[in-house]
Length: 228
Length: 228
Image 1 (tube, one colour):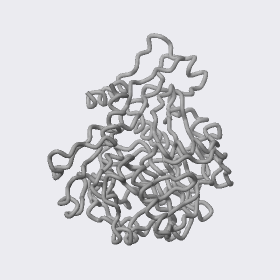
Image 2 (cartoon, rainbow over the protein chains, first blue to last red):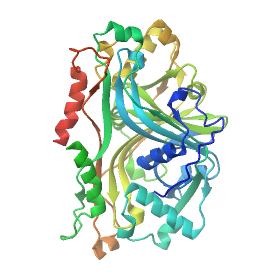
Image 3 (spheres, rainbow over the protein chains, first blue to last red):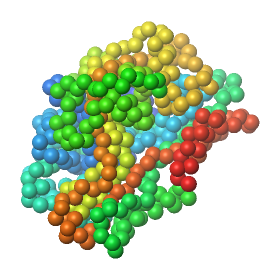
Image 4 (tube, rainbow over the protein chains, first blue to last red):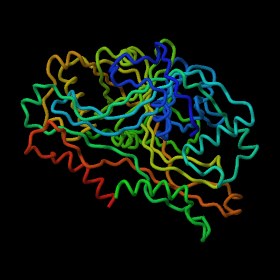
């Protein structure tokens, strides 16, 4: 991902956190970090007056988030003509407390509010698709066939601005009531959660002699090292 | 999670998949499987005409999905008085194809459309909270302090029906164009993704002699075994 400005977020009432303000992070770098660490976002649109949430992949370029899909996708067409909300959430752990109501999750979450526009400039369209593919599979774009004219014609690319966003994180262990801690006798702690890559699986129809590329092996190796 | 009926989903136009129909699964058991495997959902509501998507925990009891939150949470209040969309997505792998436009993700995804209602019956409220806590932390409810009257008064519990939902999964490797496979020379395959638990971390303020409970250790051990 490219470098971004480090300007503080400028939340409007829509993106200002009403609850758990201590969990909000207003630094723009935090937003970029969550977006860059996520693999999928959840795109919320309004269709016929009702909310619809769908998972989709994305890519970030500076202050712009790119989405793509088939030109025939109703949800994307809705996103093109109205407001959207995009959430990226990373789950980091389950918080085991001494009382039921203090159970929680550690997480990093970004919620963006924007009105997307369709990207029509041919150069920006191809750049956006590269950014989306490279977000899902860093290092892959240059190793594979580029989109054909026919593929490009069937693809809708949307861009949305990252200025209206909120970031919320929970870190650390349980935050129990003093009386529950004093009473004692109950275990409390954190069960950390991580998303890991397993060993790459080569397709059956790949001809002998084609090795797993370094950009794929490196991604798995990074995980294997942490797991030990 | 309790057993559910295995009735086929009865999708309305809202939940009928428009795209990639071959990825849809209409068996009710598939919906339950996705919901039971997920940890977080993304709740979409309409606030002031605009979509808002937020991550939150949930629990399933048969044909009912339960959500909870603070009585002061605006998004939950919106969910109480209008339609919602709830998405649960599990990411299973990155698909590396031979052409940029065939890159994809393996995933299991459920999207529910419903109009929630507030749970007001005291017994159902406590049962719903138990189901939500047990979903995040199986086996934990009976080991910790139950909610106090004050905690219950500050908690909003919502129930929503699971009859209008769609399930979409992608499995298997890349599905490249025949000409790209024939041309050869490019690696293609799957980089599997898994969410794993690391070793539990005991809170500093837990008194000596209190061991990590079996329901927590078992969850980590299950992961450690898979990783090897």
